[in-house]
Length: 634
Ligand SMILES: Nc1nc2c(ncn2[C@@H]2O[C@H](COP(=O)(O)OP(=O)(O)OP(=O)(O)O)[C@@H](O)[C@H]2O)c(=O)[nH]1
Ligand SMILES: [Mg+2]
Image 1 (cartoon, rainbow, N blue to C red):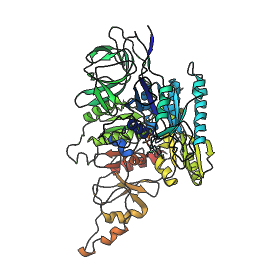
Image 2: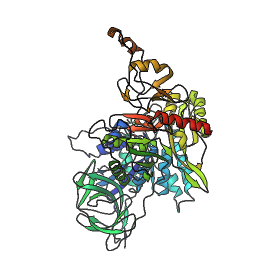
Image 3: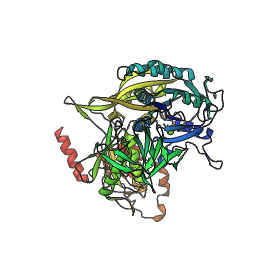
Image 4: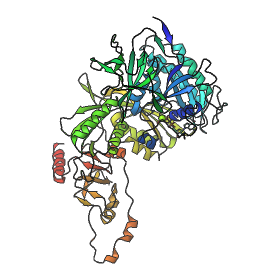
């Protein structure tokens, strides 16, 4: 047996905190390697290909692309660089972990103004624990508020800190290599990179990405393999196509995989089945092309195995050697997703309504999404879905809604654990950047949510950075209030901090709900009469039902109102045209805002057309009885 190298190949993942410019950098890498035909119209953030990604402007799924580098540093012929673009938002951390299982090195992007943030730490820790070499890329040097030297220093400190943290956990960690990381300065948007540090707010002194490609070729090792080792490939991602069905993305570690070949498929439960690879594809730029075979180090897509899932192994039937399972961090937030039980269910024809359809859809999600779990609730029409964070779960609901589902979604809750007989709950490490003037208000807000300050630093620019350790529960519904307090200027980022003791009751929303006391249609007359004491979420002419929440009270308690009241008109001409002007425009809540708003006894009705908040118990009398019963108890 002899060790060999695929020197024509490099596998690298781009990792960073959210919005630091990963996907934009990949655009530039694609363009500068002539990955497209002359007539191809390159867009911005090409890898963010699904609808929600484009709308929200963030990456949700890790994706791979391949560029063929033929530039001046490819001295021994062209080199294929497989590039994995990963999401930066902490809720999709599971995607990053999976992305790392495909590569031999990472480019760690850090925004030249924001510096390392919680997710930077998270991804860097994962990369170092997997012993992947790191290239530090200080990005967006063109930002007028760039502070390049400081940010570089902060990144080095982070590396040092993590390396000494990990030294005990990870065997033979190469500390010297970690501390000697190559630094590249870039503006991904301008497609420019250099090894020389630019002045703050300016572009690098070189106008293409050659220095980055050079660093990748030099510091990311070519995939190594053993030339007599039997086939070993890991399923790292899934996709589907209308023609080919389920597609599995594999990283081949050892041996060769050919189209038409029969291989051993090692499933999660340890069982092994022989299957035939009907189709094999390789990625070039944004598309997949049929191919005959793949070798060690290659990332290939295969079709023909309908039930294959992430983390499973494809091996040689004669000599089956399974690869280790891919692990991801445990989910922290859960919510129930079930059939729509509101009186307005199925108003529009053709929606997906049944519990069966919902269960099938959730089961399908489990296959491609390693970071969620589905748990039985004991009810036939609702399931508990657990994920890393609120956003991850909201995205699932949003996707289902677009596919035509009607759902009832419960308030997000935390997933608790019993440790030594005591209840523990998940905590977050929250980093806040804000203008100094809001410091007091934010400290108060977090104290109410049981957060404790861990660190505070003043950039000297009128902005402060505060770090808190806070129960995940305290962050449910946090964002809306935080943005109000900081007038939209504050930036808050959270990342898992593990489990600690249950922090006790947290009061998140001080105002009560306004509940419609009957079914009907909202009238402007009723809204104008009520608006002094409350703010509304509904528009005139919108349909409402008993138990539906139509607004937020200015006091703490809930209030049932008739929002369908008509004005008694004696004279048609005095109709209320003038009144309309007095009407305060209602607040339009997004799905995420609705989920944040809902209290324990409330839930959210989701249909492709509307999102409504409602009481779990719709009947006003039943609710009143329950309230008085609880008052008596306490
Ligand atoms: N000034 C400046 N802005 C940039 C640069 N590169 C990207 N941006 C901007 O930064 C924002 C985020 O860019 P993305 O490429 O989507 O960032 P990302 O890291 O992929 O974000 P996620 O995938 O959601 O984590 C966009 O508005 C870009 O236009 C740069 O070099 N300079
Ligand atoms: Mg992105």
